[in-house]
Length: 196
Image (cartoon, rainbow, N blue to C red):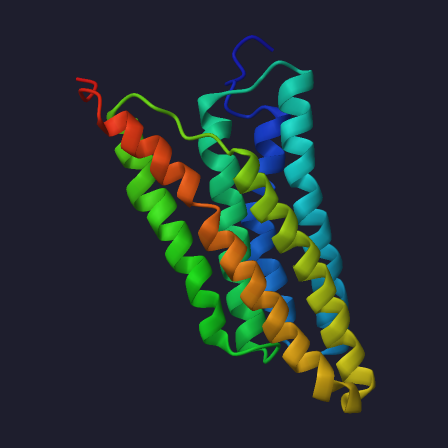
């Protein structure tokens, strides 16, 4: 239909699905039940599958857009900040370990992207951002499995809880370090006159 806005492409629908999945997964994790963790874990995996789908269909249908470049990384950021916070509150690890993720995304989306935009630069996801998302996805799946096991075999908590802390700490480090190339890009852009 010719009047259909291009905003609602299939790729963008997959992207915005992650905004919906985030509070649903968080709510399931916060139930503190084995079924909540099980369903939430599978939904989280499905949510991250949409991250593959949006890029795939955007390229296949030649619908790569500035909207997608903005909201694809933002959807990932919102999803993981909410989910990491929920898992921390649920007791998988100390909740303060979610703070580096929040700080990283605030710097990225509140400071760096607007700064780049003022100089006519669109900060699309780069290889380091994609690596960050991959690491977070793998660790999230592993954490869900570990926490699921602890509910059935509580004596495993003695080694699973420290493993959770190690994994989330490593993931936080990767997340924070992945922002450095964006700083370099924005610094180069700000050396040029701002776009009127």
